Length: 134
Picture: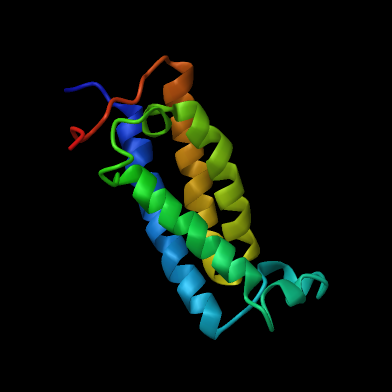
């Protein structure tokens, strides 16, 4: 059997989480709800009347898809190859997703993906460009 390449596995998990986050943010525009509203209603102004949290989730989700797919101008750059940069940005994406009711699954997927990225980072794996620069 082959060796498990953890950063590729984490890439697929994060790609799934990012796509789920985009879908959750889109759904959140129509049915705005904070996940933690059963504890407090102090966060309700973040989702309605102005959909601040939904826009943040949409931007983080698009960034995650563009980063993990990757887009042509991102492929092969230092930011694209950096696992450390991912371990800085994805906790913020996870937090934003976990605050939105529709995005809780995406937030949990982000946490799992970050754990796998950290596992890959601690074993010394490096992220190689998946596409040649054009």
